[in-house]
Image 1 (cartoon, helix red, strand yellow):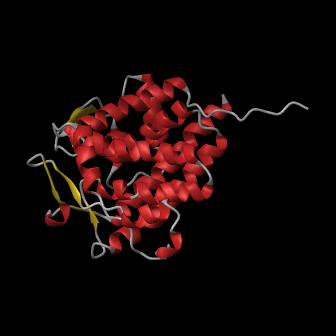
Image 2 (image 1 turned 60 degrees about the horizontal axis):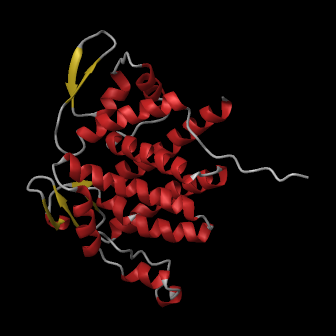
Image 3 (image 1 turned 90 degrees about the horizontal axis):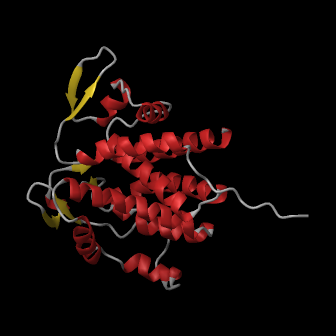
Length: 264
């Protein structure tokens, strides 16, 4: 009996193209205070800084972008963070297809997104119950998600998530006129690594994995002056609920996208 090859997950092409177009809109105005112009159903031109407003109210002549808007509208949009949602979603699709992810890999990505949403309180606990801004909560998630992916036995899911989370930082810095990879490398060098480094070399029992402690990224990019600084000294904070809703909305959108592909 011939062994059935696992099916590679690929999004429907025109829908994927539309999502990339929305990603480009979100990326241009990501964390830099720029306005986005759109046309509503009545044909009126409007300006907004909210990607969520565009998803809910924009009427686009572009068929591909309209398909993408329809997919995003199927689930509950986060009240804040729709730009992050769109960038994260498209990055996950891009990397999953690049790596040839199968249905098992995709299911592992779903599990990692859920785990990330559940892990946020441990990050917030190390900063007086708050999440730092400048996309630092997403960067802090990379190491615990890599560890979780090893436990699930799925390296492709880990690579997919790490690529997407890193893309948020690259997009944020580049939208504010900085060299994305230069900022990323400097921030990565400043990031703490004691806890998860111990886990990576097999000394898991040296620190309880049930501890709320995790390696919190605190040094981040300040878009106001273009420098890397301790974000604990900055006023801006991300709400734990907002970040959780972004992660879960991405998971729901991914499920819709791959269900559409499977039905064709």
